[in-house]
Amino acid sequence: MNRSSDLSSWNKAAAIGGAIVTTTLSLLSPTWSRSSYAALETSPKAVLDEVWQIVNRDYVDGEFNQNDWQAVRQELLSRDYTSREQAYAALRRALSQLDDPYTRFLDPEEFEALNNQTSGELSGVGLRLERNDRDRHLTVVEPLPNSPASREGVRPGDSVMAIDGEPTRDMSVDRAATLIRGAVGTPVTLTLSRSGRNFDITLVRSRIELPAVTHTLRLEGDTRIGYIRLSEFTSHAHEQMYRAIEDLKQENVEAFVLDLRGNPGGLVDVSVQITRMWLDRGSIVQMVDRYGNRENIEATHTALTERPLAVLVDGHSASASEILAGALQDHGRATVIGSQTFGKALVQSVNTLSDGSGLAVTVAHYYTPHGTDISHRGISPDIRVRMTGEEELLLSVDPNLLGTHSDPFYARAIDLLQTQVPIASK
Image (tube, rainbow, N blue to C red):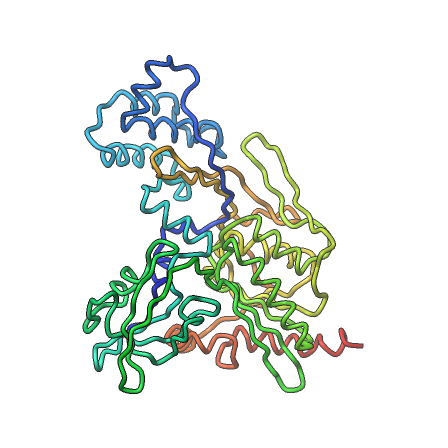
């Protein structure tokens, strides 16, 4: 099966893979004359100067990687550009001098993709589709909860025969996703086949909240375990985490497993809000800008549970994931289990530019509550788990095995939690 969804391009978005704060501020040089400003504003150089000034003002390294940043500006603005694409290429070359892969320019299409990714939303009808290679038809895997598709009765197993009259036989899932997505409030008509009968159904596109959090109750012997997987720190992830914890509390779970494996990061404020759901007091993270100004962000006595907690991490757990795991580890709130994390201790701000493009720029370095710099080193788990090549292959081929006894990280967490639950329950 070739599985994807009308949300498929979200997973292919231009990810920064880190801790992100957002801003919409952009400016041009106040020293320019009004006529020079007007001439610059209508040329491809406008965005170049916007980017230069944001980096000049905010970049975490005031030495700009030992580059003369004023000379960089002069070089950028002294050239003539025949197209925006040519100017964008020059801009990327200039930013590469910083030797910082996280400070990057995004053209309008890439910037829109990033916004979709961090917002955790897309416009569509909420269908997950797969292409059956045997009969070359598209099939509904599931309609997302509370989506137009689920409300109008689309069912798993329905075949999608046409989209707005265009036959889908031999159509790729990505092509179908492109046809189904569109502006909020606009209709799309699907021709479905169910039990040998074809019929049309018209769905009105809406904003779809993408799931960043999944949760389930696991019965491990006599122990009730709440398993929560957090895939990314999107703008809705904290709301989804709150619901997951509360739902599992209603199920009388005795301990939790929080799975951060493969989580590349996301929004800093969401990471902080989620940490506060697990940690009642103490420092969460320390942010330091290029002037040495230090901001200490703390818990606010809003923890939802004190039940035993194990956090699963791997080499792809990065940035905002490391903020969460590092805070819980430093305060002894959770046992971190798995392998060394990625080691990204930098924070980016995301700036909207005048032509619809964007700039992600590194603005701060962060440290764990104990002052540990994890940059390029990562967080060392309290309990290290090594998987065999066969085990890694099994989990990669069938992700449904994550959080089961076929998953060595999860199995080790259960062994630990079952020793802690009787103590916590007394």
